[in-house]
Length: 322
Image (cartoon, rainbow, N blue to C red):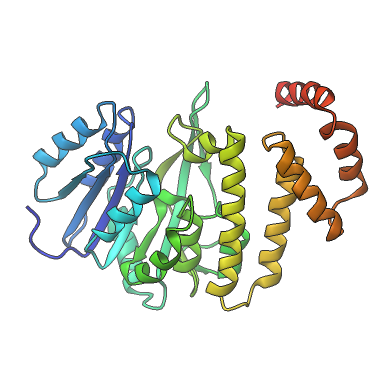
């Protein structure tokens, strides 16, 4: 068992990821870190062989791994939050079960960089994206705008709308957890919130490609949510609520930027084929009052979205073109 308090906790959550989890665990186990670090795995009662694989690694590395075996499935966010709370390190590194690290010195590099930048609470780095479509392929996610060890401003992080910092690259001080936990339980996803709260003093960027994160995998939460109209609408409402909370978290210094992101979210939802007729009608009324709908949007709404037969035909064409 792990006795000494670790400098770093690696937080891994997993559910039904038997095809991915071993690669994730290997990337964490093979780290060349000079100090003590632990790997905390929240296994959410998988129905495939994920738990069996995690138990094998836990048995083989009892001085490194703490396996949390849920007695029932509690869902992604509850699993993530409760696993985070059990992390004891001064720093926490995130690697979800379908992602993996490719540099055995990742933890050491981020630890060293953060120890030299004591006012910064979060660091991130370049990654590769593995697009798990019918023809899987890897492409680099490059940050050409930033230099190595540059402090990325909070404005850029907010403007990224959750997509700037790859989850598999996040490395942060556990001292921000209390502030994070005050808000995160309200949301369907905690990635964007972690980016913002961790970057209130800026985020440290490392120009090293040290991980792979999967896009469009079978276990992708965002992909599965957005393919269901009811879940998608709940996600949109939740995201807008999160953006409104950012105004408070950031002391009102970025309200114009955040209001712009909220409007963009509503317009994207209004133009989407993946929301209900009722929700589109509600958005239409709201956006008409605020005068944020273009004449084109109004024409499309009245000619297409109000006519279910034309809407179905246009939707089929849209999906074929996409």
